[in-house]
Image (cartoon, rainbow, N blue to C red; front, side, top):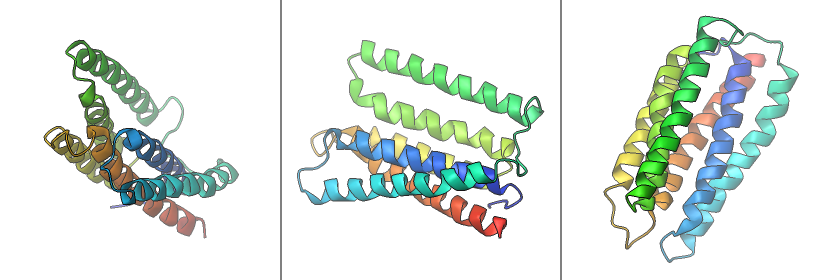
Length: 183
C-alpha cells in the first residue's frame, strides 16, 4: 500500500498532506455545529497538520538528493505537471460555475472532489497506491457533504472535518514510513 523506495517523496507527502489538513480544518471553521467541541476537533486536525509539516519538511530537505519518483523531464514528472494543471483549471471552472448558480455552498465539496480525484492518477506517478485510497475516500467525503443538511453545519465543515482527518492520517503514515526508510 505504501512503497518505501522513495523516502523523500513520502516525507514531502506528509508535509503536503499536513498542510492540506491544516487548510481544510481552517475552512471547516466557516460554520461548524454549535457545540464548542467541534472547534476543538478542528483545531486538533489543524495543529496536527502544522506539526506534520514542521517535522516532515526539514527531513525532506535534508534528504533532497535521495531517490524520487519525479525525475525532472521524465514521464512521471510530465504527468504530474499535467495532472496539477488539470486540477487547477477544474477547480477554477467549478468555483465559477457554483458561484454563478448561487451555490457557493458547493465550493468546498467541489474543490475536495477535484483534490480527491487528482490523487488517483498520482498513485501511479508516485508509485504510491495509498494515494488512490486517499483519493477515493476524500472524494466520497465530498459527495456525502453535498447531501448533508445545511441547517446543521456548512458543507465546508464536513469536508474539513473528514477530508482533513483523512489527509492528516495518510500524511502521518507516509511520513512515519519515510522516516523509517531513512534508517
